[in-house]
Image (cartoon, rainbow over all chains, first blue to last red; front, side):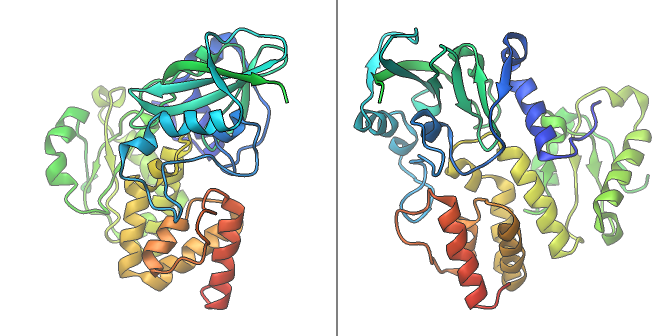
Length: 159
Length: 181
């Protein structure tokens, strides 16, 4: 039996090893420190000062309507920021791409393609990581917390 | 080990209703999978510090029959007799660990440990507000909903909740103005 994790960082690494095992076979690197300041959806849109989170209302109460947990508000958000749905996540000159992940119809995660074709993801309150393929962070079920499967890709012209 | 009884996970599952009848009588997920045993009434001294909890875990594990050691178990801490501060610390640690990979505030808010902290705040309002604000001084965390629920007051302007720095500043200012910290 493994000892109980001593710190949140250690716990986070165990989570990652357990629920995203492919990350440890294909390889990844940490590119930030841990912070809850921004989340995966914000990071996909290059924001690192606030969160993009429709699961709570304007006053901070958790939303009751399933709509706010679904893909729709996030698609709307990314469309408002110039993205449109595209076919694949292949590197395309002049465009930046993001991958949207879902479980059922629920929004679960978003990752962004970098200039070199690799992908960057913000892992909850944990660090940002750079990984090779969007599928590397497809999540395994852990209660409600899973990054789901890639649902589709979106792209916009490079800013 | 008169206060400890070891159960297998499926046994715990079968008896979960009975064992978890109290909100603060929490099941702790050990190693993110399952747990180690069911703790019977513990005295206050077991929860005075982390060292004591850790040494208690070690002793429990050492005294666990060999045939059970490599199986999946459930540890249940009985925090009923622990001080409010110890309960808060323990619940906060678990809440952070269990929700650290979640990107959605609602998932963090709906976590059982978080809800239990709010529950404690109903009974020990001043103490819990103080402890949350102290935690907020050192960390940027999702304490907005808990503080709002416990105090019945919302100092954060509408639409600012996704900026955790601003939310923190509003609550810390509120705490200072109202002499909560």
